[in-house]
Amino acid sequence: MRENLLVWTWILLPGCWALRGPAEVSGFPGGSVEVPCEYEPKLVYANKYWCRGSSWFSCSILVQTTAPGDKARGDRVSLQDDPTRHVFVVTMANLSMEDGDQYWCGIQVAWYDPMFPVVVSVLPVPKTTHYDFHTTQGEETTSAPTFPWTVLEVENTTSTPKVRSLQAGTPNLLVLILTPCAALVLVLGIIVCCRMRRASLERSGGTSDLGAQAVVLLCRVAAGVPTLLPR
Image 1 (cartoon, rainbow, N blue to C red):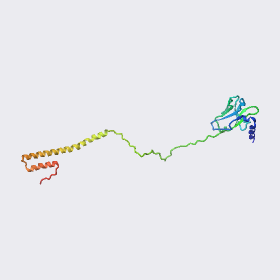
Image 2 (cartoon, rainbow, N blue to C red):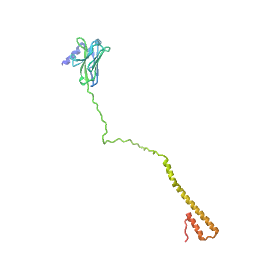
Image 3 (cartoon, rainbow, N blue to C red):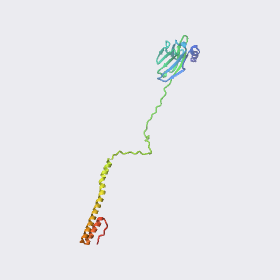
């Protein structure tokens, strides 16, 4: 009740509207916040300050300027006055959870100080969810994609083995060709000899029928003609 009465008393004072600023600012632990406090041109030469406390008449001053355009520094708090823009900026750095409280922008003048309340809130750091991706035992491994066509593999060979195989088969080919030819020449030779012998016997006329039959039989056997032996 008492605090509410003090606030209303401050609002009804003539100089309370000479200073304006944000009603609330917020930040995270380890971060910083900036509070711009605008004032009327007639207050350019007055000292500016930043104080902490629940009431305007008992707050504790943290930083205060001593001249227009001055910059005041405190423990993690700084105040920079800009007389050309009629604003001074308060910076609170390296915030902690204990810094959350009621603060005041103030200007020092005779009889009463124009002040404006600002609530500074320090928010907890949001938790980050970590996802672990791992492969457990028993899981099926992903196989490579299959295709409807077959890839032909070309064997890297040379022509040397083929040449060797042809050379190795040459003697067999010669044997197959020369053997029938030799047999045919032999048979033809026997037939020619037999005919010449038979003609010679017929001219001489001195050969018996038995000898002529023997020559004819020998020629037929050599020629492969079926022959019946005489009984």
